[in-house]
Length: 120
Image 1 (cartoon, rainbow, N blue to C red):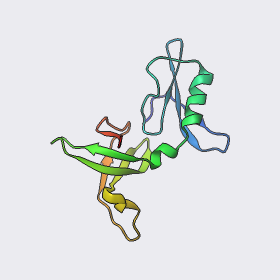
Image 2 (cartoon, rainbow, N blue to C red):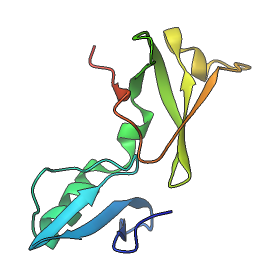
Image 3 (cartoon, rainbow, N blue to C red):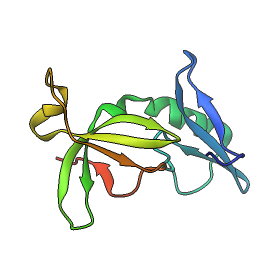
Image 4 (cartoon, one colour):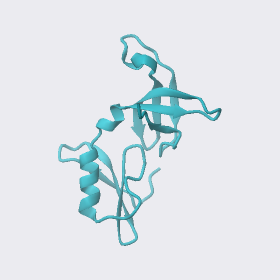
């Protein structure tokens, strides 16, 4: 469940792109993975602009999921919601192959640091 002070932010087309959270004298933007977009509070318009510029395209990027034993797997985000984040194994692009049934991993929301961008 989201904290009560998280204010949903949607683009002009109605697509949710994150939340804006009052913090001290300003606001902080939170993306759809539940991650803070900046370290320090900014004004409302800057938080809005950040979320709108970010959009939702980053959810289609390739990520890496680090396991407790230190190993990592290439994954893609299959679902991101306040109920949790589901990623699917994507070695060699297999997640998008017709008929693929990739291994799924359910993560909490906000997504843990173990899920990080694949910086190839």
